[in-house]
Image (cartoon, rainbow over all chains, first blue to last red; front, side, top):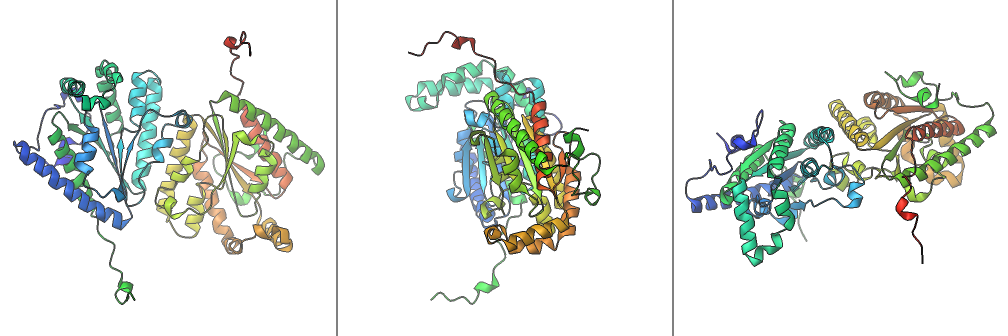
Amino acid sequence: MKAHEEFRVGKSLTLADSDAGRKPLSRGDGAADKKQVEQLASQIAELQNLLYAEHKRKLLVILQGMDTSGKDGTVKGVFGKIDPLGIQTVAFKAPTQHEKDHDFLWRIHSRTPGKGEIVIFNRSHYEDVVITRVHDWIDDAECIRRYAHIRDFERMLVETGTVVLKFFLHISKDEQKKRLEARLADPQKHWKFDMQDIEERKSWDVYQRLYQQAINETSTDHAPWYVIPADSKTHRNLAIASVVLHTMQDMQLSYPPENPALANIKIT
Amino acid sequence: MKAHEEFRVGKSLTLADSDAGRKPLSRGDGAADKKQVEQLASQIAELQNLLYAEHKRKLLVILQGMDTSGKDGTVKGVFGKIDPLGIQTVAFKAPTQHEKDHDFLWRIHSRTPGKGEIVIFNRSHYEDVVITRVHDWIDDAECIRRYAHIRDFERMLVETGTVVLKFFLHISKDEQKKRLEARLADPQKHWKFDMQDIEERKSWDVYQRLYQQAINETSTDHAPWYVIPADSKTHRNLAIASVVLHTMQDMQLSYPPENPALANIKIT
């Protein structure tokens, strides 16, 4: 089974049945896996050159997951070799008052990729159906409406030339405990620690239920979700890099045809 | 029949059967009609204060029509009394290269109103299914896709608190001839004249057919089209002002409840 099929959400996902610790792509050797990630990341960087030169299609990568699930690490590990010219990362935080005065997709739409670009959403419009629901800022009916808005919005993006890849970085509650403890233990990681993370952790089960619902409601043929076992950082990167590379290979990117008019040009 | 029902597009519109010269709201006296427009415009301006103070809902007014159909005149005549603080007019021109690198709704979405705001689109995303099709920049299949994108987009806007009003300013081909000739005859109107207008006029019938299709495809319960007979400038404003006022009255706008905490505040 190819990587993109291995993690792709099919008919219906039950998050609790999805083992966050499994490593189906591993060769059983951490060092070899890391080397493999490096190779995949280099290939992705090469294909990005073609995407940029072609200037036709767009790639949007959406990263979601619980706190400490490795969104930042994924950006660095999988997309770190790409020429900054052709990639942008957008880290969506709590919306400002001005952003809240508009529909929830307003600030999202404005940051979607243009032709030839890769954009990584580190958190996204999915926060607007998960965090917002956990905190009771919206009710179930509004969630259902927003799922429909998201499906329509993403279909429009796809039909206008954007490839949309959505990754849920799936970690276990135990693994999050370890990672939060590691942040507390290391003063150089304190900047990553937020007291709010402890609060949000108390709602772990509600988050899992809402993520599961959001994924099932919005995993479409045109914009599928991939649930990535993420207790292992290396294997997480291996899995995501595999899906990204496979997707970009499927796009059959190529340099625009050579321009015969340039054959006889002399630079004087 | 109320004004908003008089012009509202029902099941299916045939533009050729719609008389651009009729004046169903007129009292038969031009001066009286003009006075009536002034009164309606003042009432609209008053209701805008409530919309702004309420800071909850949004109003998007879309103006479309052939060249010289009176879009600029409508902005001034119907919305000219509104406090500039709470209203913005966006005149969409041919998209820039950067805008074309994104989907056609990207630049549109970014200019939609926030809470408490009125935004007037002087031309809009409907140019992207009409002009683009006339010039064969897109084909019929892409038109159909874009109609669906527009329906989804406008439904999302409505479901997130925006009232969407769409006006087609319907003039006859003879009336356009007169207005273009008037622009040519008056040096002070030359800035409004564009040689391209003469070219576009040659495609009159194609434009009419495509506008008719666009209107029929996107006139929904949540975001209806109003076809306004616009050979008479005064009656055009009378009709549009009537629909806008009726719509704003229907919104049942009111100042937020008084704040009891303010009762005992002394300014020292």
